[in-house]
Length: 325
Image 1 (tube, rainbow, N blue to C red):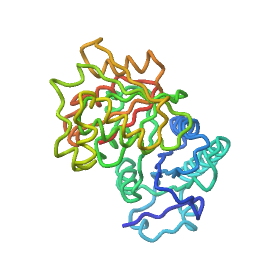
Image 2 (image 1 turned 135 degrees about the vertical axis):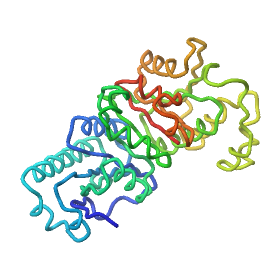
Image 3 (image 1 turned 30 degrees about the vertical axis):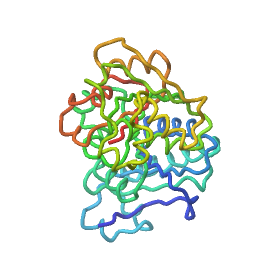
């Protein structure tokens, strides 16, 4: 059943096929998220941000079906009303920050929705129902083990959602440089495909494709049916068969989206034994602001330390991580 939307922003948003759901809760972590996107997408006109919050309020479930936005504030007790006003002010401030960075009001929507089945579940449901291209969440800089113990929203979202790319922002991220680990798998190339789509027309970003022999065992088979199902047999035959296919295919996806070749780099290393540590170390050394990771559809079922993506999430701090599954 649809939930009452307390507040809406622009009634006529800019037509676009790139839309990001930005989870807001009035905290410093929300502010870090806004700072990140306002810097990365400064002046980019064909992207839309929906600032969205799930309000956990003391409202009986029986009222959720009929309560409307005009009556809602009157229905909140003083404590919940204060939370609502704090989030509302946070969204207003966020819109002003975005505007100062060339992201106009026609690109920004706002919404506060009453919680029904929990914050994480409701965020995932909104991301799916709205067919967003990505969901952005700020996380506490405590490390994923601590977050799991605390039952963090970000961890639950990662566990529940594999069909919408998730952008996690840890701390204040200023660098516009992207580190993209590649290993010859479908999941790795899907992550690059998402990156190419989201960075289309971006005048700021710089991308480095990163590879180490430790990132996969054996020689990757890339021109196979799973690749054909996504990119087509003709494209795969042209770009996934040569000796340079490991780098060439992801480069081709970015170039086809219009990404400038002068801002696209290759980075290889043979240092280290563990892919997750190599990735985090490289991001730290070369001041990469964002790591873009692909993951298998079943990674969430493997537990906290079930895959490279999970381990990077555990180790990385003061960096954004895009997870594409």
